[in-house]
Image 1 (cartoon, rainbow, N blue to C red):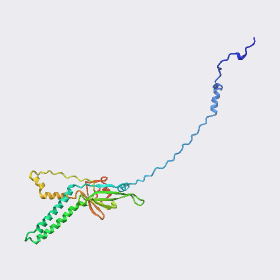
Image 2 (image 1 turned 180 degrees about the horizontal axis):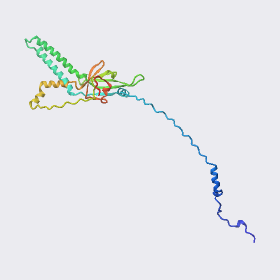
Image 3 (image 1 turned 30 degrees about the vertical axis):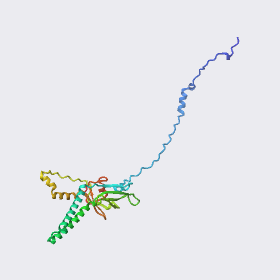
Image 4 (image 1 turned 90 degrees about the horizontal axis):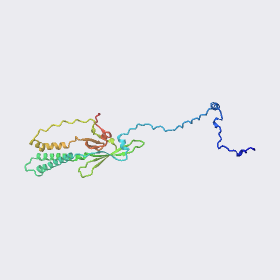
Length: 277
């Protein structure tokens, strides 16, 4: 019987073959690993980031005057509403003095009775002159009150720091008239007679109880002496602070007015009788 051709014999679909990993012995793998070590990659040096040095601390201190000078708009340093009692006392006392002068003139000079001694006429003229001068002084006194103070900024230059100029508004002699303006070139020209807001507060005196009753209490209010005393007390300057401007004289500022930065005026203006805390 002749042999069967090989291409007619059945073939398996899969041929088992030895894995490639076992073609070499494990000892040769270990030997190759020990003789040829793996090269380590060198780390690239870190990139240095250049930074700018911090700005030096100059420690510049700006005073209140320089702070106002660096602003972009005028600032109100003082806004005072003076008490009606003070104004009424001034105008009322001045009116009373003028009325007394007019009455004296009509009685002892214009309509003098016959036989009136000459010294009475001279004394009447003297009293009329004195009372008229006092009435004008008392009535003109409210015009020495400063009601508003404005600070106008002056920017700094290469030769001088920032500063301010001032505008002081005075009360008119009559309430219906516009206020007068005083222009001051520098705050160094203004000085206060005493601190506007002292650091040491005065202790209030104890209140004494009123023991008057009935007609005594009524008479104490309507008696001419009490009325005159209240009028004098009404024009007292105890609630005001003297403010002097070089070349313009002295003025008054009320303590109860609104003031910028509380003690701002005490730091901007020179204070003559300042008490250290």
